[in-house]
Amino acid sequence: MALSNKFKSFNVEDAAIALWLFKKTPRPDGQPPRFVGRWVDTRDELDDKLKEAVISARARITETQEYTLLAQNNEGSALAIDALVTNAGLILKEAAAELPARRVKTMKEIQNTNFYAIKLTFAGQTMYAVRKAEGSWQTKRMKDVIYAFFSGSRLTLDDKPSFRISPTVDFFIFGDQVLISDKAHFESILAYKEAHIEDFASLQKDKDFKSLFTTLDPLVSFVGANKIHLRRACAIREKGHYRDKNFMTRLRQDHSKYQLNFELDAKGLIVPTEETGADIIRALLDHRLLSPFSEHLYDVQDAAIVS
Image (cartoon, rainbow, N blue to C red; front, side, top):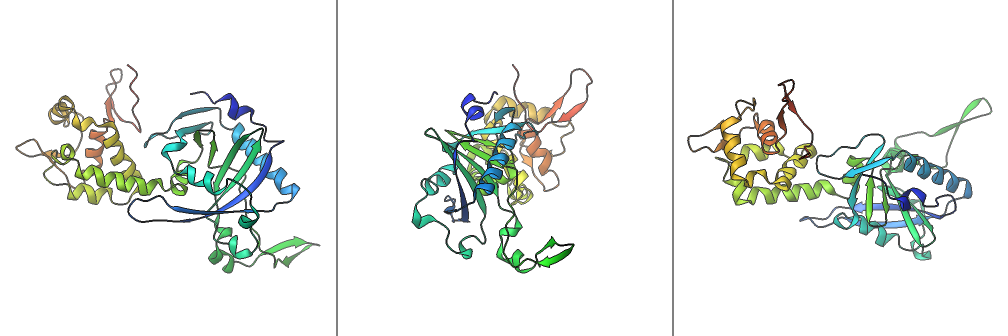
C-alpha cells in the first residue's frame, strides 16, 4: 500500500511547531481513557531537532499495510488505520490550540508525562508525531537517579531536571489516518489492549462461539491478560471462521492430520485445556497451513487470501 503524497510532501521544515505533553488516566467499563494535554514553550534549537527527528522518522516509512490485530510491520513500513476507529481524536481535541491556559507553567505539569506529541502545522494542515515518554519523565525515576554532566575534565552535579526526547516516532496522525511504526506503543497509548479485553469478553458471550466448546473456562484462563493472546482471540471474532459450518466440519475432520493438538468429545465439541489453548486459537484463525510444494506444515502470523 503506497504512502499518500500529502503525507510525504508535508512541509515539516517550515511548519509551526508545538510540543504537547499528555497524561493518561484509564477509565472503567471499556470507556476511552482520559487525556490531559499541555503545551510547553521550546527554544529554536530544540524545535530544529524535533523537526529533524520527524523528517527522519517519516523517511523510514516507504510503504504502508492495513492495521489488523495480528499484522506486524517491518523497518520500512507502517501500519495504517482510520483515525476514527481509534482514540486519536482525543489527542486532536486536547491539542487543538496553544491557548495560554494550557501552557505548562510548573515542573509538576511536566512530571509523569505518559506520552508527547510534536504538532506541526503548515498551510492549513496539521501533522502529529506521537511518542511514548521514557522513564526520565517519571517522578519516581527522577528521585532514584543522580544526574551529572561532563565539563572541564570532570563530572559535575546537574541539579536541573532533564527529560529525554527520543528521535523516533511511534505513530503519526495525519488527515484521517494513523500511521504506526511501533504497534505496541500505539496500542498502549491509545488503550487498544483495553479494547481487546472488552472484545474478548464479547466473544465469550457469542452463542456461535460458545457452542463449539464443552466449556470456555480453560481457554479464558489461557488467554488471560496476555496482549498477544488477546489480539489473537479478537482476531478469531474478526475473521469469523467459527461461524462457517463447512470450515468447522473440516476442522473437526482434519485437525489431527494438521498436527493440531486438542480433543473433541463424542458430540464433536472442542475440549479445551490451557495446554491446548494455543493450537485451538491457531486452528480457529486458520493459521496452520500445508505447503503443496514441500508438504511441510507452517504456522503463519496472519493469513491474507490471494485468490
